[in-house]
Each structure stands twice: as C-alpha cells, then as structure tokens.
Image (cartoon, rainbow, N blue to C red; front, top):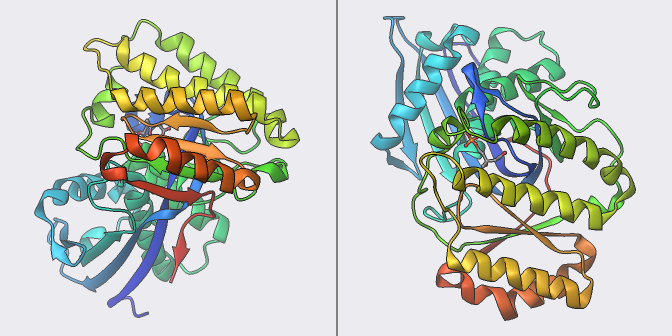
Length: 347
Ligand code: PMV
C-alpha cells in the first residue's frame, strides 16, 4: 500500500451479551462490565478505500450500503469520525469510500451497529498501521476495540473472539472500561462451538434506540443495585466457564436477559420491548428444558427477538424443537443459525 491511496477490507461479526451492558457514563464508559460470545455468521463486511486529499479541516467520505449510496447512515459515521479524530489525527488528510454490507437480512431487527462499527474501526487501524508500521498486534487489536467502542459500546466486543469481556472487573485480569479483551481464563469444552439460533420475532425498527436506553439508567431507581449485580454475575461466570456447569450458566444468562428488560419496564419513561411471541418462545423453551433436561436457554437484546443458546452436542435435537415449536412464533418463520466465533477477519 502506498500512503496516498489504497483500500482495506475487514469483516467483523455481531456478538451476544451474556452479562448485559446497559447504562453508560461520559465517553462511552460502561456503567458495568459485560461479557459476550462473539458470533460467527452474522457479520458486516466493509471495504475502506482511501485517497489523500488536502486537509481543509473537514471529513470527506462516501458511504455505500450493499453497493448503493446510503445517505441516512452518514450522520452516524460523521459522529464516529468526530469522536475518533483525536486518536486518528490523519482522518482529514484523506477522502474515504466506505463500502459496507451485512451477511444477515437487511431488516431483521438484528442491530448491525456492533459489527458495523467494529469492521470500520479495523479498517481505520489498518490505515494507521501503514502510517505507523511498528505497532504490536496487541496494540492494533486493543486500539481497534477502543475505537469501535466510541462508535457503539457493544462493538468493542466484536473485534476478538470467542468470549470477550468489556469493563473493569477486579477478578478478570486485563479487563478495561476502554476496550474489550479476550476472556483470559480456561473455558470448558462444552462452550466450544456453542450455538446461537436467533429467532426473528419482530423485524421492525428498534422501538427504543440504545442511546435512549442507556440514558434511562441515569436516575433509574434500581441502577446502582443493577450495576453491582452485573459485577456479581460476571464473577459467578468465572468458575462456570471453567467447569462447564450449564445449569448455573443458564440461570445467570436468562436472569440477565430478563433483568435488562426489567430495567426498561421500570424506567421513566417505561417500555415493554418483548412481544407476545417473545413470551410464547420463552415459555416453550422452559417447558422443553423441563421435559427433556436438554440444556438450552434464551437471551434477549433490547428488542423482541430471542437468541436460543445451547451446546453443539445437542444441536440436532434443539433445531428439531425449534422447527417444530418455535418457528411459528417468528415473523415469516425466519430465524438465523449462528455460533460462537473468532472476531474480525482481514481479507
Ligand atoms: O452498543 P449499544 O450502545 O447498542 O448497546 C447494546 C446493549 C445491549 O445489546 C442491549 C446489551 C449488550 O451488552 O450488548
């Protein structure tokens, strides 16, 4: 690559939180630590072309989404550039063409901000590496996660795999509020190829933006207790990741999902983001688990879709159950099969 022009291409996956990030301080600092599984199939692929220009004091970029100009995404990118400029001082020296696409259906209700911001951050780091070739790989990935965080908090957990922690936690070595880190301790084989089948209950636009959602945790009557609970749950997961106790894993993961929604139901203003079919699915999972003892559980993001989590060893039985009993609760019968993955890829 010359420093004058060229292009990079990175893909970055989505991720699903086990302990949820909900609430933040200034500068995208999380109010509590979170941990997630990086996904493998739901990803954003972004090509960043750059060409040197006169630094006239402003950012210059074109945005293509699935090959076509996408004006309505531009303000979000503009804001991202403003936030990261202090850390990438060369941004105004280039004109950029950002060409991006997702592997998951356009209006699936799957947030693409985590994968999208992570893929963009990786590309900008590639350019920074051309300008500063001596940086270590560790610095490269940590800073990419740092930049992704400034785009969208949870995006900082999409740079690496397979289990990523974001936020200071005394018992997790290397954890930071500023970027996500790979979970540093032993993970039991039961989590290897762990499955996430995403049931698309409501494919519409998000009812509550995560920006508004995080804001609702300011002055929330249960905020302090909730933030402390996230620390407790993350600590409880440490032995569980090691010994593979799925019963205990399930209890924490499902409780975290319901707590996230409980926070929204008890904020002012208040929201119910689940749909009737979300509850139908949750009840069907509980019944199936009780009857079969198969270790399958659910988690939720800030919406109505349900992530069904289970070990690879029970994949066939769970998929059979999903097809027989849960697909009818999905909009147009749609669901996405994903599994735990390794993070961003350069190609
Ligand atoms: O990254 P944001 O600001 O869109 O927040 C995402 C928050 C949740 O998805 C609801 C939880 C999480 O930890 O991913």
